[in-house]
Image 1: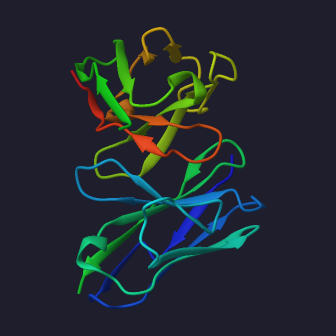
Image 2 (image 1 turned 135 degrees about the vertical axis):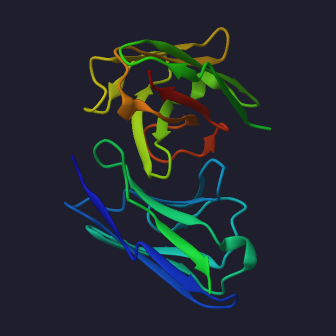
Length: 106
Length: 117
């Protein structure tokens, strides 16, 4: 199975900060990567699909990039509603999620 | 709007069985692959199983293969997960999700399965 790692596992940030999370796959997954946001007690919500495409209705402050084994997720100006846990997910073979990055309020 | 509503969770003894269901509405059910994804308490997400549009292309995570069966009833717009020989490590919130080829673009609220004596 393809293993996914995320870095950092948690971070503290302030409203307005730029936040970057990285995700690495154990083998080449092309651009077969999605990013999700999960708030406590809620189901995850897809934000970015195919590594860099913004899901309909998702604010443009969220973005993704990368291909192959290394991917980046960025929030350009953190908003109060963005404090959550973020997961990457590969769908090359078959589906694996990263361990998550919890974004805390500083 | 798209709605997925899970049911069937609860407390189950080790070695026992449970059948989860997911009622889908707000979209053409037969157009989509469907999946089950679980999340153990305080842990991350684990894809469990998927079923293609017409019951074809079924696949399972290695950790549950042989103990679970995913199925769909297209006439009733419903998805099911039969889980047998349950273990403590199967304790989790089980989410029904639309998708299974690429992204999971709609999720239910989840149903908690607790395996404990």
